[in-house]
Image (cartoon, rainbow over all chains, first blue to last red; front, side, top):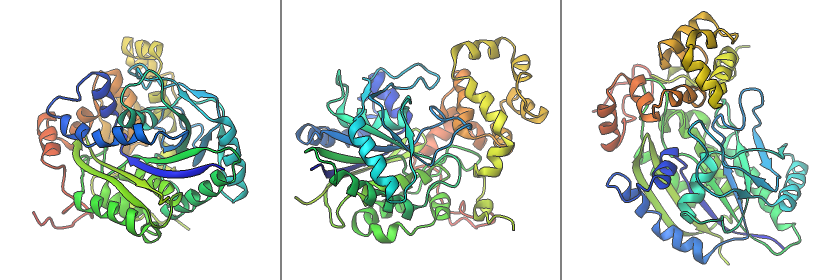
Length: 280
Length: 131
């Protein structure tokens, strides 16, 4: 049977991808950020899963305003890194796992979460930057990836509770898959940031760290937080953090904290990162 | 019954909700078209003519020509779509963010290095800042 062994959460700031692609990771501005991922890259080498279920959001790349799916699962064989207007990132093609993705789609829809099935989609920095942070710059990504896109661009996104419950449904789906697969679930985006209007640049270090504490210790309670608190306290784009609750919902109530990192700034954004393992 | 919009009292912030998305549909779709290199070239060659191919309001077109991002957002633009416009101009997210706050890019970058804009005094319109 397939099993979810660990969860990873990380911000997915596009400038981080550019810093990696342009060889700037050792520059004074970026070095402290990448230092926080040194442990993670080593951990990934020792704990490479068969499949990553990667929760992220599209940033007006694959989806324009003609179609805005709340939850969309990528069921294709492969996904190309998107050209977001500056050319494609020089990263490997993302190989999917159509069989597991289709199984999860069918199972989760029958658990009352109405997913949109996507069979052709380019993936933007929301998905490729976390892969680069955790794997560095390999010729090929060392495992399969199922992209799972959540709408957090057009308000309202799904509630934190909806996301948390969806994580639980995804876990049940994975555990009912017959092949022996080691699956990780990643939740990306956040932490506090606002990219628009006169309030742009908002960062809330205290709130972010409290969010990390609560995500680890009391996710049931954290899931009840209304959208307005994310937006008011963590900025209009801080709402991306609901995606971390999908990851957390798919893990055990009690998890082992393997790694925790927080850094300000990456361009306009506060960067947060956790590695959580399900107890064996 | 009108929808409850508790986010209306957050200073300096426009939430891209369904009403804004409706207002900004063509503005955002125009911006999205700049993902394609040939469209970027056509836009750069004659901005006004390219804008006239889209069913945008005159106000929206003027805001684009002036690169007034706060105005574009007020008229239904969303920052991830508008990003295609400043990318076409060869500008970064940090450039655009600084512009919207009225700070120079250097001042803005320094504010971020210093830990970003504090939430104190920025949660509610009229909230008194502690610092």
